[in-house]
Length: 181
Figure 1 (cartoon, helix red, strand yellow):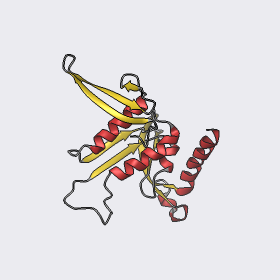
Figure 2 (cartoon, helix red, strand yellow):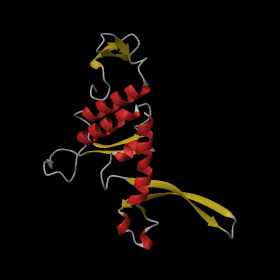
Figure 3 (cartoon, one colour):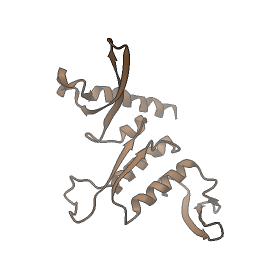
Figure 4 (cartoon, one colour):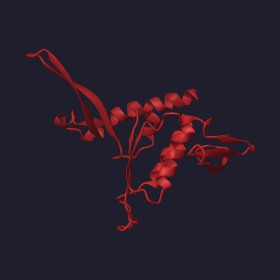
């Protein structure tokens, strides 16, 4: 947690039996502890995620929607890298077949999050409208497409894949954002 939230040096959990709840205090470098009731939503999200991923009883799939919410954009890259270290790489030579897999599915609108992903880790989702002229009806469906290098797309595959050029155009917005910070 200290690598994601500078200044954090300690976590203290106490049980309040009267109110049947736990109290969490976050110790800071300057010596002042903060109750979980006053820290940011982003800090609580990071803490909850790290707790889940470090739970020795946890295995399987974690679905994490919009990790960018409440987290400073400049800390997102570090958080994504940490998450990558905490989940199983099914293609790793070091993978022990006896250990349960731990996987993560992230849903995000953030080009910063997308810029942290490696080839083959991202899928694009968008909405497609279908028009039935005879019935005067429009229906919308979610389309999920894989990412392929521009030169590998054939005309019949263009509707089923997103080109790396389209991804690059989207990622270029990160550089614009970082230039403003």
